[in-house]
Length: 156
Image (spheres, one colour):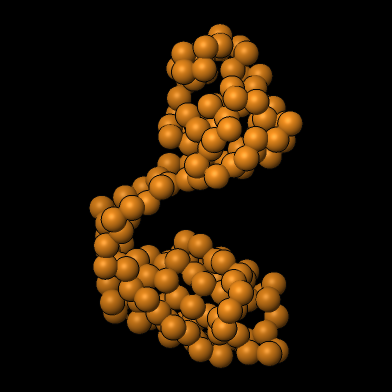
């Protein structure tokens, strides 16, 4: 949940929420949601971009339709001599890795990965285990995803 700061007013929050739902909305469509004309919406959106509230625009793809049938979370336990910058850069270069999170707890990182099969996942795990600085992994395979917000809750 985003808490209102002095920087964001109710219209900004409504615009952020609307853009998160459909980043392809025109300024006129956004204007009809927030009660402003398109040029005023354009100015507000540009300011939100410049201030870093909007980091990027993207399309959410259907992984299963693309043949990526398996989602898993892989906990990565690193060795004491691990170079974190090199390690995370190498993770980012693996196409199966969707997210990398540095976490508190026993593991050092948790990655969300998508693969086409258990064999593909096994191949990915072998590559991960061969990385410099890797000690071991633990994998949790996702069976279903009953809920995915697809963003953050924007409230005043």
